[in-house]
Image (cartoon, rainbow, N blue to C red; front, side, top):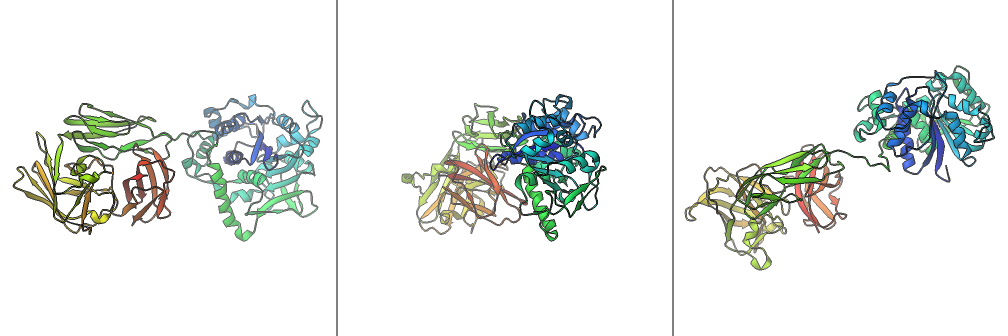
Length: 626
């Protein structure tokens, strides 16, 4: 491959790419485009240096993926030099977008190089080769043409400032790029203009740097470089990074891992045999490790640097990650007439491009659902709520939304003046609450006005929004059908404060009788001498409460509501990640939890879901951003 590079601090490069044989040449193109996206290089032209007609279209397909379809691509017109076909480039040329379709439609590479060089300022171009050198020999041996009155040697001497080659293995003398066309390699190395620095990146440098495995898991299927590695190396497997080293050095220089041997020159003969001789000096050098003792560590560091560039998304291309599934926070719910609750849709993966969903009710006369997933009971009966992703049409259902006539609630005490009346316990809103002044005991009675009552076997209690000492500690649940004779269904003593504010806990009990009245006798809270609070009560006989909170005893967040940060307490160990979504399930933030808090200052005011995931499971809580 050939490259051109630098205006000011930004390099202009033209490259001679192999695009055949090993897949590392496509990896080198990925590195080149990533550096171009960062503003470190301006790619002037690219050329294929073998005779396979699929190579030039493959280069253009990669350029197209990175948003640069108009970079000129030339090809070797000489026949017989590695004519192919090579499996992966044949596949990419046929299956990824490109306009060339065949090398027949590409210009002769050396003529393209002349045209490109003639248009550049003097001493402004870096030339990179990562394959056989026939195109460069043709360039150096070319005569004057309509682009320049200079012959090839003089044109290169005038325009090129540095020449970087992936080639040579001086310890043994034999290396693939040099051996494929020994006469061309001998001519180029022995006749290249001596005013231009020539730098070799030898085979053993790239052999020790492993990259490529992450391409198959971190980039989309539309990436032709990913496909090249999948076909050549296999999914999730690494490959050597020979060609990437030449590109990285040409654009970024030595870095912290390499040094240069500048004494001596490369001796080469017509077979491609090449060795390093200590004298005389000929403005040639080769890359070496900063020290042999540090070579293993340096190779690992460079592997990370190179692969980070290889998996970088194109800066001017929208990469779409499809939705693969969607789920709901509950599949069953019981809802009093006139009340509401929120369904939460979670579309996966978290980095899917489009998390938009639509909602539908099978029976809007019984239960309606808003565009935000808020379900409201408007009639008596049952309905199914379905969520559908706009991307891919993935669906999930809340199959049993059972509605019933309104519940009547009375209490021994309530704080009506502060808006904390007892009816807040059944309004479906986690952010309102019942509050009561006074000494214990306190009681709350719920009367369910059904035509057909149900036999509940579970209840859910949601904590209030402030001091945990106001949470319930000791209570009994009793039931009756005449409000005179009461049967004890559940007893709780010494219950600790809820782990989080506005969080929900479920309490199961054994029961097969349908009762009309349910009474909570509260005999102690968690230490507040004057005030007791509770946000929501809900009864059910299903496995789900219908309230958008799943709380782990190992996890709590505070403060809630919060303005800038969510702090959390947990007993989680190992890798812990988080995801913050809207009520509709759209992911807004995600990452690795590496401290005791998560910054939320960029979120708008509203209600959100925070999900903490560990190897052992996950916890889901709602929170309010003020």
